Image (cartoon, rainbow, N blue to C red; front, side, top):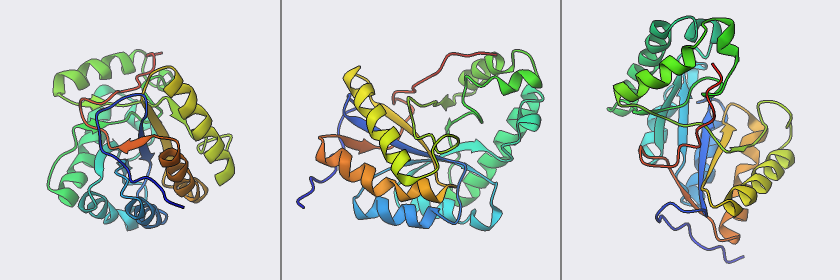
Length: 223
């Protein structure tokens, strides 16, 4: 098979941003190997959930991927207990990112996404406040408009592949770039990535990593 090489080009409706939450984990090295095989840049929204794999953050950065902040604890009852608690957790993770990469992240994704309603259980209006504070601090947050379903619903690589490719086609038809949500903490989701890349390249898509100027795929704030 003569697969077209990935073209780094301006963002358009054929752009796919592969993003991975909740790692690094035991599956991250395998993912990095697949991305390297096809020269695909990705974005990692990292946590400290698996301390044994923190060193992988450095490997992600060295491989040319974007390291972005997700959460230190990913514990909703903690991060959404107050705005101070959120930023304390954020800064704890960003300090790890700095230790691993030499720079702080200015891109992040909220635990649960900006539209989450679980935060209502802890603090009314906190997402509205955090979105405003993030802008003042110079941080850019990203949601997603393509969900792999790997955090619920999907439990196989086939399902992840179907979810991602079907939704990418719909998003592209609506003239938007695709911001794909996957979790590199889930082995079956990582198993689907090579097929997603091949499908994308065969169908005229190009892959990029996120920057502060990229399409943010923001959801509506529900708290």
